[in-house]
Length: 565
Image 1 (cartoon, one colour):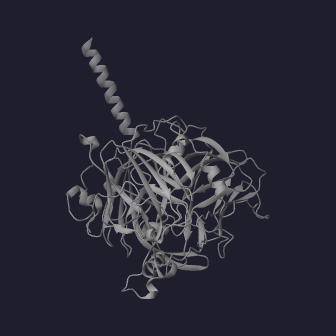
Image 2 (cartoon, rainbow, N blue to C red; image 1 turned 90 degrees about the vertical axis):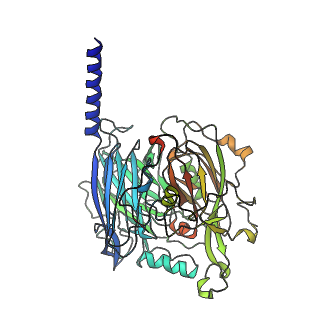
Image 3 (tube, rainbow, N blue to C red; image 1 turned 45 degrees about the vertical axis):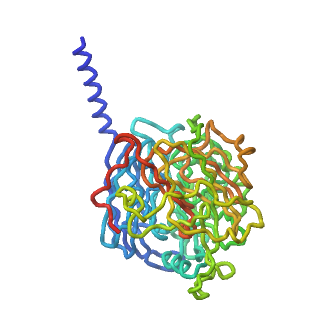
């Protein structure tokens, strides 16, 4: 009896093993980074692309699959690829931010990113994480449910990905390099795009406008990704309701809305039912601009929702989009986000952190000519967290320095609180607080630490809605609000039952957000503003999460082909 029972268990175990090996796949992809002539807005320029495609290829996987992506750099710039929102459990070497988890892939060299999708479903994306190359180097990463599983909503009739982007007629690398030289803000973009196309409201763009075909009565799962470099965007479909079901590869309690707002880096999954008269309807996106008196691209990108068998005789029906500064719409939208089911939120907190985020002004160095100090009042723009403007190393990556015990690359004294308390969102902030200190400061966390971070916007130079992205982790957004965070009053507002799980939080303009997570992924993990101009100015920091106990709580060894600096 015992022998038979043991044999049965072994048989079942072997069956499970063989089934799981069939279910979990290893996908191999090749990304060739190259210059490709791209024509937009009547002009042709060489853009950096993956495999000659703009946007780059969409990767589709199932939860549990492993990806191996060999990146060969045939362009003239250093590059890395970041897999935005992928947890990268113990595989920090594959995360991708330049000089944080790896040295860049030099021209002519290659590197293979190897990682497994674990417990994630929905829409993520990938993009370059080196200088401003992600302006054109990006694509969707679709994670379908594991084989044998299904969506927590009726299966849609079709699925469509819409990736929102930003286009410059100039080379984006030249744009940011010029701003770095002058100390001024970089030139704004010339267009927004949907799947790489500006749409027919721009010059020379009518024929290439993206068309999304639908049949009357059918329901589409539309995956919206904001890949714009520096701009939060409103998104809508004329005359159609959007039922939000997920964001950042986490499911949500469904709610219906007319408009989405996505900060750069964020994704939103919506169900759209073709229940309107069979015509053509504009899909549109335009800027949400919260920083006062700051220039921005005030154009509108469009695609067309095209009902089958509809003629093109009549123009598409136009949508209604919020005003560019409609923060009330943004607030009412974000407050509807709740996890699909009740979740386990860390209740006892081991590390209670308070990070101010915002801009700043560096005084003009004495040896700089005036044309290198074209920020406000002859200064140079900068940015910081807790008054530390983050500086990336250049000889080693932070993860390499940590793993190999290389001294002098970083320190672990990033402040847990602002060095000076002040009226963060007030109008009379001392000019002495405008100039942060520069440093490569990390914050060390023990494995398993339960972390809470208050992210507090400041009105230094100007307040702004900042999309803050944490690499290697998802986190619960337990509360958001305006003004200065007050623990005595605001703690009672915390949602510890079903808060949304995100990888990027839009910290409200002149406000705050509170996030919680458990530090269960060892490595060095960047946290930064996903407005690329701000990360260039230093609006970021990194966590050093120590190994736990045993192999499953320990960072994997560095791969043999890891690039050298």
